[in-house]
Length: 120
Figure 1 (cartoon, rainbow, N blue to C red):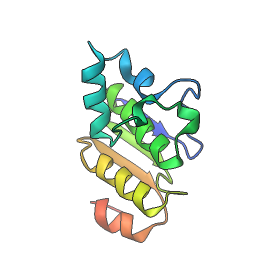
Figure 2 (cartoon, helix red, strand yellow; figure 1 turned 180 degrees about the vertical axis):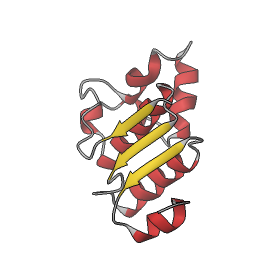
Figure 3 (cartoon, one colour; figure 1 turned 135 degrees about the horizontal axis):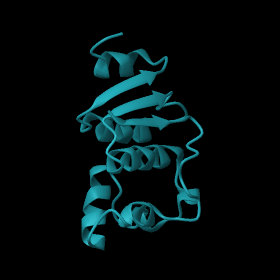
Figure 4 (cartoon, helix red, strand yellow; figure 1 turned 120 degrees about the vertical axis):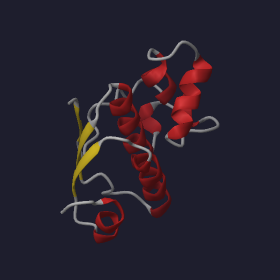
């Protein structure tokens, strides 16, 4: 078991790097890194923006991508959709739905719980 933990503060992202730079070392080439980021809904010029300029939802998706790259198969998410607008929430939920491991999420949103929880 490899645990990944996503805090509300998203403190694990280097603000000086871009999403592409954040994941690039895990891939043989930039195209493979961009294809991976596309699974987390980073398209167009978004992979090149500094992490410090990403919206909260984008940073959440990037944190999730980092945990997947690290081989995490159990995710502990602390209010993962807190502060997300509707489009950002939909993007995060789409990215999370492709995760094949176990997710333990602490949150108060009934819709999210009904959609993702197999046990409460």
